[in-house]
Length: 94
Length: 333
Image (cartoon, rainbow over all chains, first blue to last red; front, side, top):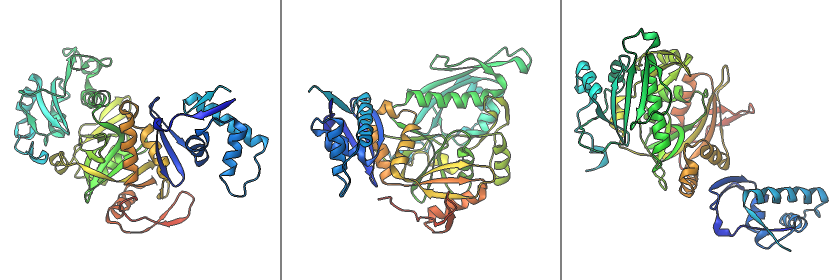
């Protein structure tokens, strides 16, 4: 199962001290997201990715971070499912 | 003609005598209230006298114009005892809610006008907030019911701050200056006596008992605030106040992203305005310092705002019990 983020022109971002607020143009909704979620939506999921690869890419953004374990990948999977419900990512056919 | 002068030459309500006002009110009269031209027609015995006192400073309008809305208040069962009389509120011929006790006519009119503003005037982004001005900067105080917003607002309006609104942070989408709409401030229950003690010079309307919010009494806006109703004020401070019995004064900075979400969630029409609302709230947060205030003593809180406006540092306790320096006023970023 792979996801990619909605196209960048669907988002408007505001950032203060590594905390983010994003306006999603198609839904008209605004979401408060932390730095990890912002990284997923803005950078990592530009290319379609499954939860395991996304969790690796996320961990890779932190220097010296350990290899993500199954719990972390499950957490990222949960995030992606939630993002999909909100229309922030779309599921991509294999 | 500059906006600040647009209504300077208009006669004010108090240029009429009370009897003349009551007669005009029964036939229908126009008032300039903030950015709105409001036509009010009311035949309710409990209304004319307090309305005359509370709106005495407002510009009277002639009838030869298109009004923003037509508010009507009609007393029903006028021949019956007071206890069973009702008033019917309508706006542009529509009745938005059931008839209410006639003795609550003033509160019904004020709440009805709030309803009309919130549901109709989407050319403004409407934040749910008190707004005051000092030294050219606007203080935004968003808060939920029971948090002491109106009490604090009325107190500041009588201690050197200019009242823009106790309820609506009106903004033109894309702009960061607040549009004033000074109106009577409805104090509830114990706050009425608190205000009488805090500012004996404040003029209050009648205490209206038994409303859905308990006893309500309206504070007349200071004349200076009404006279300056065409002068907008750019955002400078956002303070989320909360009154808490016996609490020590606490004042601390709020992360801007959190402040953004609180403002957006509590706006009347954020989602209606859409992207422009996001951009406007972002700009407001960008240019403001954002704080959380917990208080129990009105004098202490007002003094804190005075220091904030003057940019004077002071030791204030944060919510975790630590002392901190009160950040000075100024641009946020």
